[in-house]
Image (tube, rainbow, N blue to C red):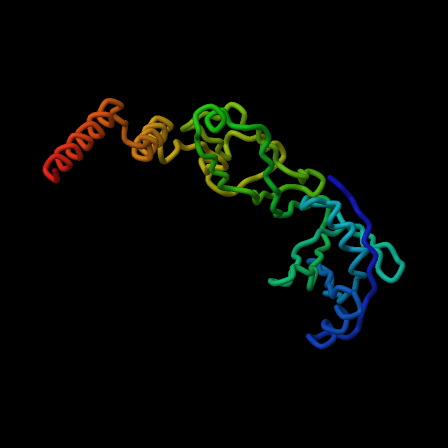
Length: 232
């Protein structure tokens, strides 16, 4: 599992007004807490944290906090990040101290690899149902992500919790839970081709009878001759 160092400064003042001033100064209000630790308010440089967090690509990491220039003796994890609902800016961060010999509950991203045969060859629809899996394990056993290869999935196939490797990991939910599946298309290719054929037939111009036109012209000329005779 990845480890990163994040530099922070302690702060005495708290509250919404203080938080707004910190954000205006390109800093993020934060807090660190633990089972045996009193919550400590922190402030972190926005660019410093954003660069580190962006590099994690959504994966979990063990955090080595340096507070006021002093490295913490305990590891931590990012327990929660609040974002601005409109602009997406980071508003607040919750860190949690952890003990390396005690299991913790975390969410791990699910990564899909490949292209399902049922989608590629038969026009099936891929349903990605679970994108994060909540697990419990020791900190050192937290996977960066869970990889699933979907190349062999045909229409009607699925990958369930019980189908993935959960070595050193506990999952408290139903092992029959579906993570990803391939279902049949709502309209079959045959129906689509038939529908396209009908549309083409409706759009095509009516056939022209090549012999009809001369007959019409001949009849018209005959009528003109008869009219001329009557005039005489």
